[in-house]
Image (cartoon, rainbow, N blue to C red):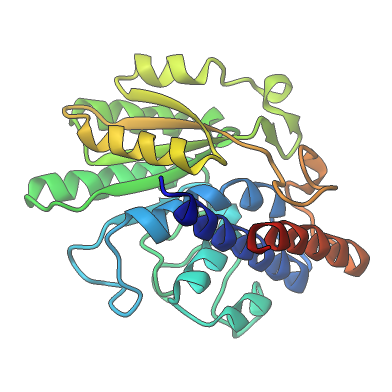
Length: 280
């Protein structure tokens, strides 16, 4: 990928991280850790890959995105705002009564949200249905979904995986945000889903492993997924929970906690420093 493109994508991603943390701080609740770890994946999909138009959020031929780990809505909202679906000012209204942005994605009210999600496992199941619908109607759009690695402890995920493989949903590409942490600690000690790549392979997926923060690897994986015929693709994206904020990185305490004013100030300094380095 052209270095200038990588630079611009990285700038978008750190602006998205700022937006996500700002939203959680303003709400005094939310999920910053996993929101920060998926920012690069969302940036790539919304600014490089997907066929979308913020001015026509319901156009029939658009690619679809389902945030299966719906509690990381701050990242999706910040991405949609950065992409122009609605004003960034809306981010400070997260979880506020009468404002646009609810605690979990709502397809009925929020521009750019293709599926309401929150209950873990259900998002990827609906993504399978959307992909099958495209197949049945001979539509060309692709369906992308992001799951958490803690989320895949849910049995419904594997029911969806069987469904996707059985119906040969090669228009479905899922990302597993493999940051190794969930609300109660490391996934390896809570209820280990490892080996994750082998499991998806056994369920009939084409499996790719990448660094979730490397745009060249993300692009190569997405292109490989598009070339794969007859089976869905699972991209196991090794990421850093809390990416970009020094005191949040690899710290499960920030799975579902909001920063106080002092911590918010430090988070903005950390993220601004990354932006300054990129833009300098």
